[in-house]
Image (cartoon, rainbow, N blue to C red):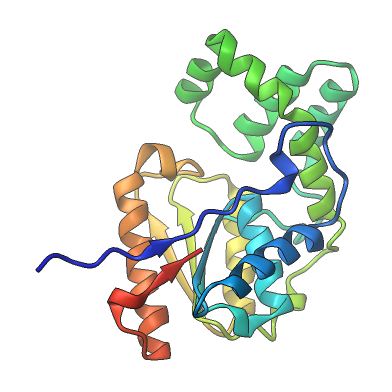
Length: 234
């Protein structure tokens, strides 16, 4: 018999829905995640990438019993100061001047560490460039909400869930610094480095990423005594 696939529930964050960029706090989206988890028949493994991982972390911190475990792929946090630092300042200057595409290019290239080749391909395509520019207001509202959480990682020290911390070997230094701070804070942390990857392994190394998420699920559900055929991922 073949392996029974895990049930997967995908959350579409309200921050990035069409319309004016909302200015709600991270707690609002964490509450959305908790509301969805409450509809499931057992606590799921919660997986988040980038700012989605920050939302996942906040949801788990608010109600740890709602989840079997966490997979956090490079969540941005204001560990030592505002997320993105000097690069974010330049990106916001471009945004204020009306250059939304330029702001996103700075953000993706320097904050997210997108490889120059991939960045050039995206911005050479007029449709992709327009789509990225349209999401600039939401992107920077997202960063503002994360910065409002305040500096440091002590707010997560009580979180004992099995937590896989994923980082790309070639990711920006500030994202890897954040993961090191989380690894030192979370009692259940399991750091994993993705060789040859950066912040975009979901694009450049999806099989590798899926393998690590599957392994994280096996660890988390084994700890709860859940059969692999009954697993759920959020």
